[in-house]
Length: 286
Image (cartoon, rainbow, N blue to C red; front, side, top):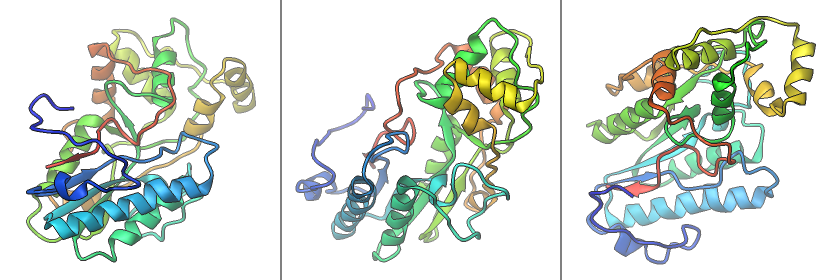
């Protein structure tokens, strides 16, 4: 919770009985609570209850309270599956491939039916202090003293630094015109996994030490080292275009290479616990 936070109310977002008190005199809501994609094994009904229905209930409560704008931290998985053959934009028809993505898209569509100014930020993979899951595993690989056989992977993926996410939230909060739409949010330049490792090692003051090996051999080696999930994620492309967000004066504060290097240089490389949140930002109201 922010140090300058005036108050906090604790409750069950699936049963928002105290929302009138929580939203009194609130200008805008930033909603990031929910079930994360990494929490595999959950039934689809749980995603629907917590990611879709709870979001819509909170938005309806915000509407009744006279909130000016509702900012929903959605996901690129509402737009597409884990990989994509084309550059993703908001103009493309959404094609989520799992329960998590479908629940996020359903929440966006539910918001569109409410008489409230809303915006959904479709976030790609977020990294920053305290990051978890696959990005923490990637940082672990970068910290290892060994050369890494990742140079043959040419697939590029869009990432999103926490600083750029914060700027995106600030931009949509400050936008003077009505929004009522989704925006994709990503760092300007997609990177291959080898380029990510090189940027991280630069931050550690080291050479990239990345070399190519054939794909099948690499897949087997990553499996043996316990990094099969990381390999599957970063061996397929997912490039997202945030140019629409620039129309509301969003300007990234850094590129992915510089941000990854700074993250490692500052010494907060994340943990390997499964992520339970879409990003490092907590649910909040302003």
